[in-house]
Image 1: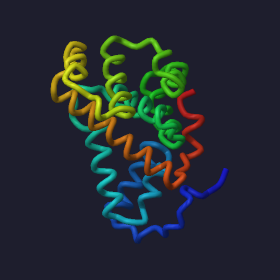
Image 2: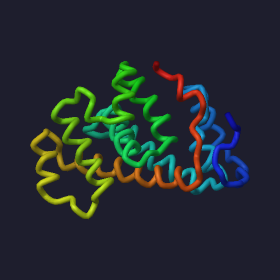
Image 3: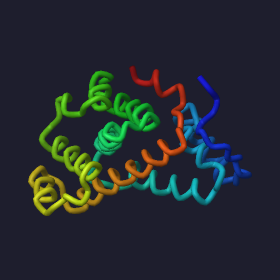
Image 4: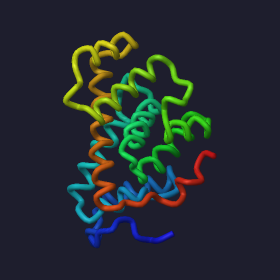
Length: 187
């Protein structure tokens, strides 16, 4: 594999102590610094904005479990054919679910997976928001409420789906490559 993270030639900025500490924490917890962070490292302000939003959405307080949030990331990324996010978040789904086959189903076609009614409703909403955002109507939100989601949960589903739509588009535009390690994780 190549060492090139993106197709762009952007020199990394001087890393602040906060960024050095954040990257060290990634190394400690994940065994790597995700390439998406290295891709954003050309601009500390953009890196911080990305990581702050990501950490709030994926790790912050929510009625959605960490696995459910990763499932949204994978379902959206599957629709968008985002190589980076499918590799990285597919690995997270495999790890969090403890089921490599489930993780692969989520990457290829979430509808093939054995999902609860709650999970199906959540992912169908995220996919509709990805494919046809102008067609989201009250009935779509009502279906989520019927599946047991609160209005706060609906906000979190929408925000997570929207974040990954943005991330997928940036990754596609710059040909962002996932860390090789993701391919072997949780198999």
